[in-house]
Image 1 (cartoon, rainbow, N blue to C red):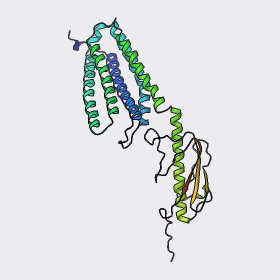
Image 2: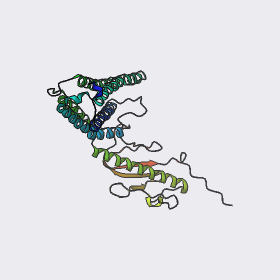
Image 3: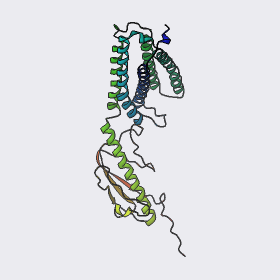
Image 4: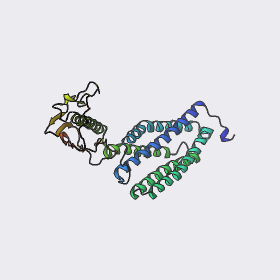
Amino acid sequence: MSSTNIPAGPKDVFLHLLGIGTLYFSVVNFLILVFQYVNHLFPDPAAYIYGANLDSVRFSTASLIIVFPVYLLLSWLLQRDIRAFPEKANIWIRKWLLYFTLFIAAVTIIIDLVVLVNSFLGGELTVRFLLKVLVILATAATVFGYYLWDLRRSDFVLSRKPRAFAIGTAAVVLASVVAGFFIVGSPFYQRQLRLDSRRIEHLSGIQGQIIDYWRTKEQLPAALGDLQNDISGFVPPTDPVTGDAYEYRSTGRLTFELCATFETASPERQDRNYPRYEAAGQENWKHGEGRSCFSRTIDPDMYAPYAKPVIR
């Protein structure tokens, strides 16, 4: 009987399709995660936005934590099934998916190398280029080599390679996930950064309202409550955690000060590793941990008072 004619039941089709799907999903997110680490450790100043994309890091990390163990479990179930019924090694769904995986691995090597060479010729840093090439080659070669061996082997009972492959890949994936806590910070730290970014957004909005107040009335508000406007709907925001009002005081005819209490210090680099700390107008919002104040001076030439309507 031809191997392609060996029947495959619904259980076989389901397990093989889900197993290969989780493999592809895990490999893609592993590459994305490692690439973001490379971007973080070796930033390219020539890039418009450089550094790790935290959204990608979070999603890829979550994907590996959930999906990769599912892949390992499905692989174990399939290996156990084949050991019990060796003829299942030749069912059509397994053969087709393994050959398709080999095809995808080979094409991935070719396409990604072309993309990376193109990026290198476009001026990407040599270190970044070499590291990404090595990651892609190592990953694709590992997948290609293991599944080529799996396709050709016959010792489904004695071989220890599947277990060694599972342990090795699990160790690499675990290391990539743990590395994220040291490279881009823990989830708790990221939450602190987002809260501080929210505080900066609040202060920037208050600052804009103060400037608008001065341009309208040619004087600074006595307190933040003066900025509340029932028509525009503006209400001075408060701290997102404590609910306390932000500090404001007028220090002169054209000068004022805004203060807030932050949970972290501003990151050194302004890139996609962290929320933006520069609002409209490119004001400097760098701060330390704890209470920080920002002194502002209104330039009447840049922010001229609004023309008063002529009443006839």
